Image (cartoon, rainbow, N blue to C red; front, side, top):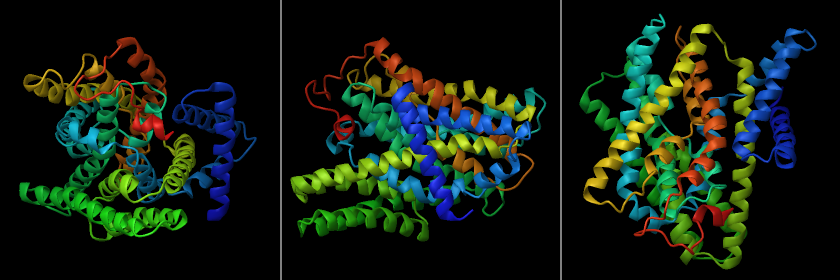
Length: 431
């Protein structure tokens, strides 16, 4: 199958699934597309078992699509930029302390807690899993997926400050989690000694380097856009910023996700206010909303199709089911501790119910699966991939379908210091 044929197949399936979901299910697109894709994959597996079709041929088609490459070095850059464009910088500044803590210490804490409990759980069911591999699982399952989270937030009328916390954290923590994952991976494969100096230097180069690169490229693009009034050229400049910036980040070994998120915030705030005409803003929003919708649909179709190539064993399924409460507990701890500490200094930063909402709203998605598929060949690789897939499907379907109901049931009041009752949400306004 050629690249064009594979692309055509994904777009056709995504379009049909989107129609079915919009016309009949009316679920959040993130959830609906994944469920439809999963059902389709299970039907294919059933027909293959009945020898109506060749299951091997179907699996070969899916395997021909390099999920890790497509997501981490393709879709992710565009989807993160599209999400960052609509993050209000002023609100982000007001929430910088909780967002920074949860996107850094929260990710590290969730990695350690998840990895340790997963290791103990594996031993409990009789599966011999080395501790470094358990930590790798903790690192790849720790980040909340910004693509899934932003997709759910579009349909939930949460207070503005809460929405900023969730969206801001999800946009930044995946970049930090990728750095943590790569750090642990380098100790597992023996390419680097796990010294404090090596780990600190790697984190500094990736995270801080990515932020600096994003600022530089974002402001360069801003000044270029400010010097003309041609929406077609300005849209092309944003495309160049995303593709060129992400590629440059990979070449110089800094965090690509953090680079495009920071650049997106610069363009979405400074360039939107001071370098764009009304016509350019309208075209920019429409263009990136279309990119966001198309790639979102393709991504969650791909997640559903991955079930065709996953090697399922009883041990992997048991570990995957065990990982669900572990993941939720680790998320709760990584949210509750920072929130409780911040409340000691200011009771007005968080409203009641925020811990439960941010715990349940921390969806996992394509980034976790892409990281799992990037694991080196080992007797433990397939088990971790299956466990990751089970957690991701649970997170998107169960948490995704019930998140809005949870927000409404808790009647979370607006945070008086940060919320404006009459100002439209920056995310909802964009969509």
